[in-house]
Length: 434
Image: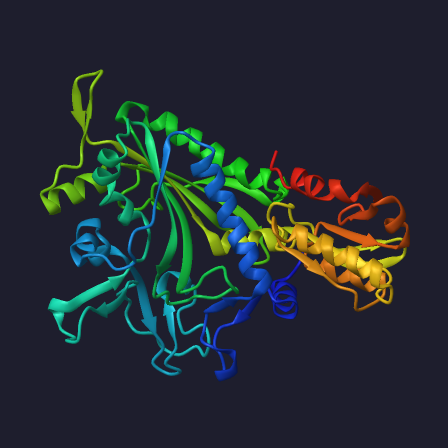
């Protein structure tokens, strides 16, 4: 089925995934707050990325660079001079548009005359200290990558790394987008999951192909349907100034096919630019080959917000099960905000309730769990299906006799009896990503 963005926005508000920022004051355009379930989902996406990119590999290091950096970083990287969008204004209604998004001779809103295009830098400016002058000028970083490049030598030396190896980082970035929108797809404040992989120059093309395939497969392994995912190679006229080649992993969002992640072959542009601007050597000496070189870089750069949105959209289903309609989020158990719900069938039986609460207390030490005894079992199942809880457990009088519970699978709705002492391992096994 296809789902429109309004349906996803409604679900997110209703069930506590995502709220409009500053809503009680009328909201702030294109800024969003992740609610109780949304923060769990987004954290799970980031955790899954970190698990596969850092913990599961022996050629990777992690980093958390500061958001504020020396302004010369952005001069050297080309962001001060070139990180711009063409901007036009309507002389009649005063609305502002990106020139490359306007395909009419006049204003898309009112038909009025448009100004000549001018370049608009996307970086947010701020000031360090009490005086707001050029000497105190700083920027909110528009990407996390530069924090990795300027720390290349620090990580290389402190961790005694050999090429090839990568540095991974998850963190906030900021871009003063002219036309943000489409829910959390394009915002001015967002979170990136970026990795720079440093390689010997002659092996860069091979590593580039490896990471294009690896990042495409990552989304499939975590539950994205293959028909909603594709790879698109950038044409020569699309490439960024630093890129030798680039692929986008694209997802079929309700707004159409759009970028989910970019994998760029950056060559040695960044390290050489910072080496020249800072006067510090950012090269590598190969002991075996007895040669010194500036490494080439392959960069998979994903958006945590876009990935979270893609997993939400892809998981959404409206189904009919045994002549009953339901809304269900078929999230991979590893990503689901709540892993299991404990639902005692007899809330007036103290012994049943005690057994249920003891199980709930035990499980929540290992993963997010929910406890609910406030309605009919059908309605309780429906609530958990709608937020993507993969397993529901019911406790009844028979549980007191045989120490077994009934566990229900979200996707199949099938139920089976398992021992109380098997519940945790059962759920943990299901959370493993193949």
